[in-house]
Length: 273
Image (cartoon, rainbow, N blue to C red; front, side, top):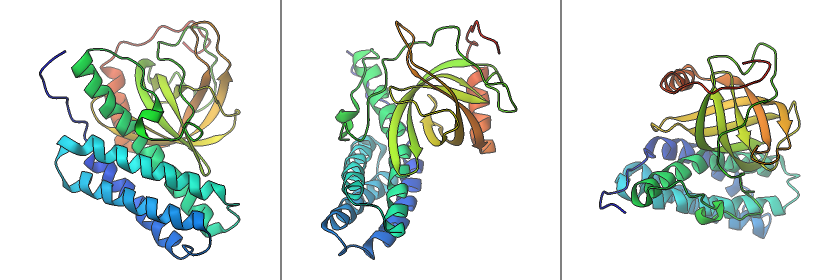
């Protein structure tokens, strides 16, 4: 234990971006609020989330974790309500995708805050159940246990090959997005070319994904990528998928490069080491 106050993970920027995304979803959903009771409940939950995010954006960092967590909980409700419907209405479907994207942005921020608190107070990396953030387990399957990936990882050889920039180990929670579905994973192996994500539900090779993750110094990366390979895992080798980045801003690329340069490279006995 320590008497030091838990460090605050910078959340005002992600909160502002999340609120911007939500404003467009709410505007669309309010036009359909009387269509079904599920849409009406989703509008109410999303509006509450927007209020919590506004407080994070404009208030003190002391309570930002509580605000982010409250927003995630309300957005989890909104997403579940919208997914009850057939989503045959293009407007509702678009809003559902936006809410899923907002969750993918906020999830790694909340987990980074949670890790920072636990590391200071308990000096441990004890795993945290996503349900602790108020998300239904049916919406967010748990990531595999943390741990360094083993050797003999498959590789993709092409213009986005994973060996680009050198690989380093990083333990960061990732919010993933495919269409209107949000789920989570745990990064293990990062380079400027892509990332290995430990997950019990890897997507097939060729799947386009959006992903958000927070680097330890506080930078939140947003990227688009494609699944290049998957593995089932076994023993102390976690299941998951290798994702090659296809779209990455210069700011995010610079942040990844700085992070990788500050870490010792991983040893990999694989074809692209």
